[in-house]
Image (cartoon, rainbow over all chains, first blue to last red; front, side):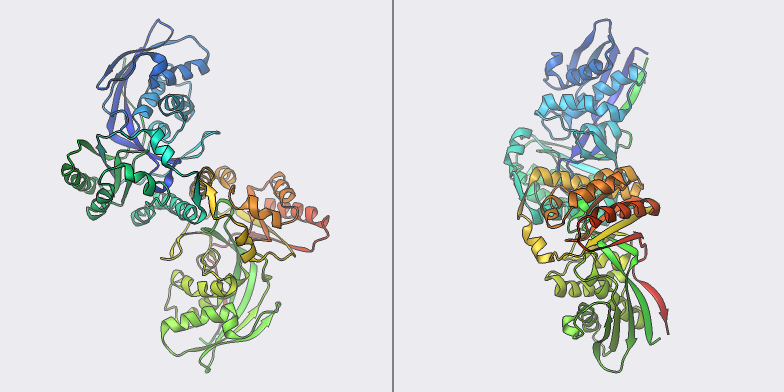
Length: 309
Length: 309
C-alpha cells in the first residue's frame, strides 16, 4: 500500500450550549486528500487545489500534524500530501481540522494503523495550534471519531463519542465575511454570571440526555446558548433573522458554527434541513453579501478511506 | 381508599458538577408518612414524630405543598398527615423535599392519581419555597421521579429523568453542625471565570454520558466541581480528608450533598459504599463532632406506597 485517497469532512464545533466542548461531523461537506509514501523523509505538501494555502510543511496544518505523528513514532518515514480543498479557510466549519486530521489519518492508514483514531487526535491538534494558536480538539475530535463528540478535558484528551441520533441533519450558511477566531475569542468576557453558567450546563446536560434518548424535542429545547452567542452574534449580519427563519422553517435549533462566521441549524430529517437552508438563502440574498450553503446528514465514522493502492 | 402509608426518600442534590440541576434519590434513608382523608377541609398535620417541626399547616412544608395541590385541583377535600421523620432537618439530604413530595404523592394517590408524578413537582416545590426561600426542584424531582434527574429549566419545569446505572451506591456522612442553605448560597460569587464554567459543563456533559453509557470510570472522572465545592467546603470540617479518604476507599467521587453539611460519595456497588462509609466514620471519630452515616443503593421509583386501606 503506497497511496490512499481520503475524504476529510467538515465539522461544527460548540453547538450552542456546548461551547469549547461539543463538536459534530458532517457527511457530504469536506476535502479530499491524497497521501503517498515517499523516499524523502518527512512531509512534503506537493499540491493544494481550491484554496491559497502555504505549501511549506511547517506552515501548513496538514504538514505540522503529520510531522507530530512521525516524531512520536520515532521511525524514518516520508510522505507526500495533495490537498483538494473544498472547505473554505476561515469559514468556521473546521477547514484546518479537516486537513490536520486528514493528514494523520491517511499517514496512519499507510503505516498499518499503529494508532487508534482517538490516539490521532493529539497529533491533529498540533495543526489546530498552528491555525489558531490553541491546540483545541473541538473539531478534530468529531472529524476523527465521527458523530457528536464531547471534550471533557483537553489536557488529558478525555474525549467521549456521544450517541448520535440517525435523523439529525445540519444546514449551514457561510457568509463570505472574515471573522478571525482570535477576534471572536477576544470578544468573550473572562467572567460570566453564575446564573447563566447554570442555565448553560443545564442545557448541555439536557442536550447530552436528548442525544442518548433520541428525544428531538428535548434536543430542540436544549440548543440554547446564553453565554457566547449573545456576544459573538453581533459579528454575523442578519444573525437574528437567520435564527428566527430557521426555527420557523422547522429547525430544532441554530447557532454559530465554531467561532463563525458560518451559522448552522440542526433539523430532524434531511428534508427539513433543505427547507431550513432555503430559508437561510432567502434571508441572505437580500443582504448583498456572498454566501455558500451546505446541507448534510451527520457522519458517524469521521474520515473515510475512498481508495488505496 | 381512605388512608395510605408511604416511604418518602432522602435525596442528594447538585452531585458535584451538577450544581442547581442534578439530583438523585436514595433508597433506604427516608421518612414515613401516613395520609388520610378527613371531613375537615384543607390539610391538618396531626402528628410529627422524630423532629421538632411546626404542626401549623402554613408553616409546615408538607402542609404548604398539600395545599398547593388542593388549590390547583379546585375541589373541596380534607386530609390529615402524620409524619415520622427519620431525615434530620438541615442535614442537606432533602428533609423538606421528602415531606413536601410525600404529602402531594400521598394525597394524589388517595384522590385516584389526577396528576402524574412529574406534574406533582410544582406543588412539592412550594414546600421547598417555604423551607429555603426558593422553589427549587433539585430534591423534589428525584424524590418524585426516582433515580438521577436533571432540571433543565426550573421555570418551565423541564425536568428529565436520566438513565441510572444499577450498581451505583451512595455513602453519606451528616456532621451534626448547622449550615443554613441561605448562608451557603451567600458564599457563592455572582460571577465565575468562563474557563471554570467550561470545565464544569464539560464534566456535567460527560457525567450524563457516563450515566447513559454506564461507564463507571467516566462517571468517576466527571464527578468534579470546580466552582461551588472549593468555596463551600470550608464550612465542612475535615472535608478534604473525607474526599481523600473516600477516593482511597474506592469511591468513584464525592462532594457536598445539596448545600451541606452532609458529604456524599458514590461508589460502584454497595460493598464499596459500606467501605467508604467506614472511612468517613474513622475520619470523623477523631473530630469530636457528632455525626450519622448512611449507605444506600439508588431508588429508581422515588416515593413508595407501603400500604393503604
